[in-house]
Image (cartoon, rainbow, N blue to C red; front, side, top):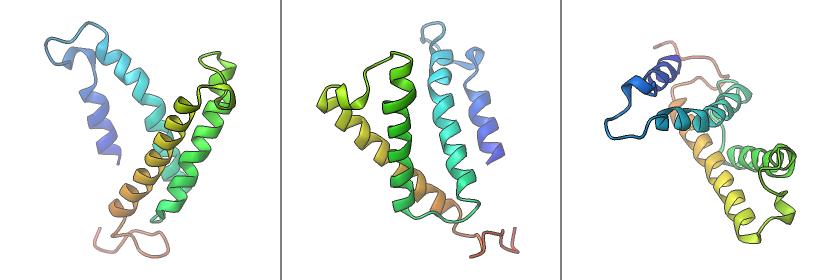
Length: 125
């Protein structure tokens, strides 16, 4: 995972941006993506090397949505709390976070298929 993170980070430097992009575009993408990568890392740490079930990912996505859209996002006055926001947007954001959590768990489960049942690495690695 460290190599993947390093490759992703190095590919997002402004000097390596594809030609034709407005100045600062890559920097804005990195600024947007950084908290999402942090949430991915937190979920990876919480699962402790085990193969998470999709239901756990759904719960994680719902928790991230709740903490974000009923917590720190309204406190920053970025948008109203989800219970006061437009119903369509609140539902869309909740669904997007469920998909995020479910896919995150499914991908980690697949990546860790060679992990022993107790969470340790297999002898082949």
